[in-house]
Image (cartoon, rainbow, N blue to C red):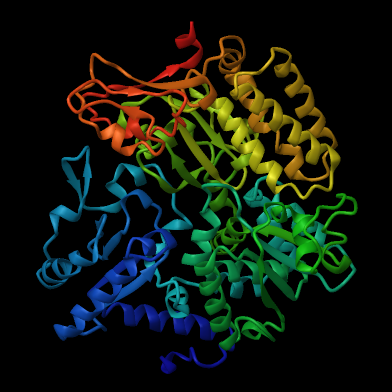
Length: 631
């Protein structure tokens, strides 16, 4: 594509616009574009094989690839239905596609312009829906970021430029830095990494510093269990992050940026490396970008996976080659950050919003959301929910709308019990809070946090004491150990919770956990310790009856805690099929064929295999309360 000058430096805004127009004109000759999700999840489900098969079939049928475009896209969100294949401009979305479906897609849809009905999304298992935005999962979303994923090949600079990529950077170069920061301030953009600090205010603090050089950092150290928002954006649209960093660097007077990404994200690392190399080749990174006189470049720094390095001061120490431990917040990173120089840190999603704000204006961005929280937010919707995946919704939407309307409710007709927002440091909210608007302030008041965007849904079979123990242990294991209050306090919390789920809890433990949690919050140095007790405090606040059942009645209402449950076989239901005995790893089940079987409680390790293997219509294997059985 040398005729479009993508093998040489793009001299300025005018030339960038000319290239964009030529690419748009060229794309008009494309009759159909087949976009295949090649995010990490779909790759694990053979989406790259679908791409290869489609390309081979086009070649074997001698179909001109200038008329039919096959592109590898980032995650469009609906992971539950992946791999996803979207046909444009017909707006056909095929779900759960396999490599074996490729030939039918080529023969029917590409050649004969017919829809393959069996690959369409089926609402309630019956009615088929062709268009993406008509599917309930997408209806209430505003995908200003994720909506770009299906439109571009994530390895292609040309594709990004064809959707007005780097136009925001070119526009920014014609503005005064203070005016750029003013747009970010007026937009109401708050940091999407968790704390929700106003982004423009952070930029102002770095801009006014005289000490140079200055640095900006993209925090891509996303470590929350079940969270993959930043990973998906980095994989699917790396040039968007680069452009956001260029604008931020120009506005704050920084000529060097870092992207701190965890090494467990190999595809994100690979795609970001390709994108920075491609941008550097045409002068979008390096010296005199777009003839503006501004010099800026990016360093890709791979973190080793320490959760605490998501905290800004620990991240800075890690980049500088030191142990990832937090420091006191005074002076702020905006004054003394990397190498004691002014430094700004925002996460991936925050940087991704910057080009749109510059292109379309602060008032456009502020139209989304509510009074305190502007714009959209991407959440990883996971757990006991029918529609798992990434959702991008306007701030202020309710938890009920996300869980029931977008998420499709709880599988198997079970009851909703709780949702945890904000990852391992977040809070667990009950059904009475489902009408709570999702914004920074409302979640904080309810005892949860926005976090980076993890949203874990739990059903009636979840033990909230066990959940508190799981996340407390996670935070304990990820603590750097620098603070005694965090290191020892979390260890004591874990011990108390272990005692409770083991049937040895005392009533005084509840007050002790509250007091200990408040102490950890008030005396810990960084955000990890200051929020780590949230799972305990929120479950005590909303699910205290479960703690009391464990302590007073020696009973786990959800029948999860092994010390408080036993497995037995109901003699009135058992048909003697022997499936339970064959699956038992400790030979704890005995009985003759076609006769009632029994479980030896001394051999049983309570793994639950027998419960899974027992025929569903019979369900002779039952969980029972150990204490109740003893009585």
